[in-house]
Image (cartoon, rainbow, N blue to C red; front, side):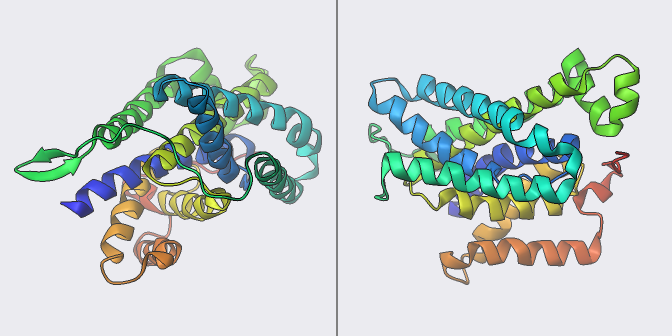
Length: 289
């Protein structure tokens, strides 16, 4: 029962953070290492709003919106000016942005570990066994709802279709009257907001510390590779595979090997399916720009 509980919770956090990361990969074509620090920023900004007296729900929403705005700002100030210089420059710019966020949060919040001050609750029971607390259940429900809403947004809204068009072929999308710049700002806002929300959830389930962003970006990278670069649905599935694989693996090895377990799962799966989990249904497309 513990494996199911912790697997679902971990998968929910990984899903929220990895989908945002994969969205940027699809549209911008590079690995945004600074995305991990959006979880750090989301967790600490959520704690700040909570300490101001806000309920955890508006505090979480406020933190997500704040991270979304920071992500859009970073795109306009840092990434857009160097976009034409290539993927490698964008990658190193993202590393620099990650250290900026890390340094600012550390300077303001300090290096000590912190935690959300939430009322203590008992775990609900399933078949007579402790299953989840109300906080944990809410995290799982929100993650599933966000994944569903993201699918509906991308599939049926004009903005979502614009994102898909730019991801497939930016030049063709521009020829069809789509503004790639506005689309990029939207993608960075949505992706960073999802990362910030994942950070709040990560903080609720444990403690807040400055290394959480660096730790999570390793898991996010593993999930994205496993799901298949360019496949959001593959990443969603990979979040559950990684989460449950890690929880099962932790029965045999210490928790400090969590990242190592994630990459071990990648190696095993990619030996069977080199294209990642997207190969199960032929999802994902090669970028044309």
